[in-house]
Picture 1 (tube, rainbow over the protein chains, first blue to last red):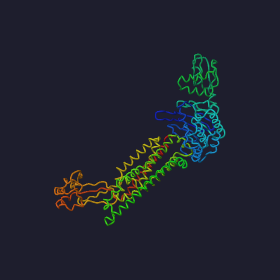
Picture 2: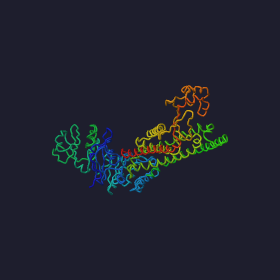
Picture 3: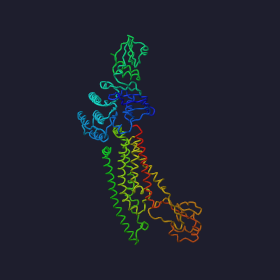
Picture 4: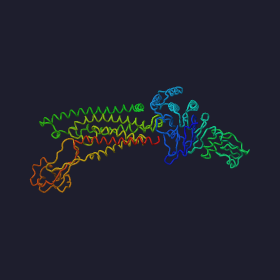
Length: 299
Length: 341
């Protein structure tokens, strides 16, 4: 399997703030990769580095076979949609299609934009500034896809969409990836929306990569253990404890490791994607937050 | 990219051209008036003197336009026009794209930032040069009667609105605006910097640099036969030196002759004080021979840039501002390509 994105020790520093530190990720071709993390985790920074809009302070990255660079051939292969949903407010959708055609002479699928906007009932002749937030997001997403890139980087693409539009959009993405050699990396602070379509996961928290890999493989490596309240030192010898929550009578652990759990006091079960993600995010969060997640996880 | 630039700026290009056209109309109307006044003046001078009109013979009738409110007002407008395009088109060029985050749209399409900048900046610079050239051409025509009358075209305030230099100022202002907008990334501060930078550069060049493009010519002569310059020269200074070579103080309120107080002249010349007003070399015939002899060591000098240097100076100043513009554009390119979007 060829890799589309590979980073080694990527660091991005803004004056005194480290937005991304020691970031090693690998994304294979033809997959949908979810970049998950709480607000301020460094998701936007990572995407901007990968798109070539920003430069890393240190470290290497290879995107589609080389470092992001000012080269029309490389730029043509990468689509990026910023969180701000940048559009020219005074220009209509039709004018945006023309802009795209003039700025992407190698490949540009104007028909794709027109068809998709028509099916979404988004007018082609109204200024982008007068469209609703959801319509603007759809227009910008469609323009990103019209470029026919091999890699699409989307920063919080579903944030402005209603639940139905989210599902529809993610299905479109899944189809596009299934069709050809397209790879999608999309960021979100929620995992629930994407659970059905994503097959790769990068979990960022506090500017560090906490977890990265194929989702099925990751889920197979993690388990939830529930048992009477007790010390966890014994289980820590064979497994990595991602998260431990204690109530008065009971201890719930999310652990990583494939070794069998011998102690019959532990009741072992499979972990859900959201549960696993929240467990990793909870590591850096305040205790109150992990308590909140623990309530949510009680079954 | 050219298409996008035209699509983005077609309204501004239309408005800019309309403003230039309005200004040109104003120049045309007042200019026609100036030309007719000048012809009347020349005719009157010629008939009064009985021979060909010169600026000298007509200088008494020449107050016609100097200080005229129209000329003064127009000159002010013409000094200000080159900065306008830089202010309202140059400074916002990159800054508004940053503010609306459309740089994050434009810079992830299939063209490089260098090309994006080159095409946009190229068209705006061309527009600035075209507008500047239109105004400069008409201004040169408009100012020709007053220049012919006063021989003033080499003087600051006049030199700056004629022929080539206004075009260079307009190009410089546009480059300054683009650079400020690209580095500051916010429109209003970029406009302020553009205005301040333009005024500072223009003042610095006009007040301190221009007089030294070529070393000024100094002509020294006897007090009794002072040099009279003709043509559109640029007078930088005049003065008198005593035999010891020291610069003599001006007359201030004391009785004076030859531009210096009589008290600082030799005793033999004390009689000059009785003459009303200051004596000039042309009326020096009434001097006593002893005073004449006593004055031999005194010299008067004139420092100036001769009229023949008008075009070299236009060329040098145009070059300076074009080079500054090129430097600013290079800084812009490096800033946009190397800094994060």
